[in-house]
Length: 120
Image (cartoon, rainbow, N blue to C red):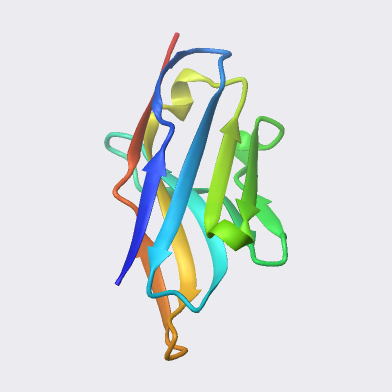
């Protein structure tokens, strides 16, 4: 089994910053990609940013220039630095990992989510 544990969410005023962290642990051989998704009330879950094991990144247009994703491969951790937060960034943020188990099967795991609320 694999666990993804997020931390760092909370309440912040517009223009403020938060840093989300996600730690992956358990039966892991390697992690190909780790990323952050978010889901606001009444909306579908959407990609925020993703980073591969080689450091390639992709992020949503809505967060470019404000959010930065980074990763510590040795610790199986991924981070999301969120600056210049806007009320529309309010959502539950989920960590995701695309990984290989020791028997080389590929799996997709999700964290439990962490709430980010941006007040105007």
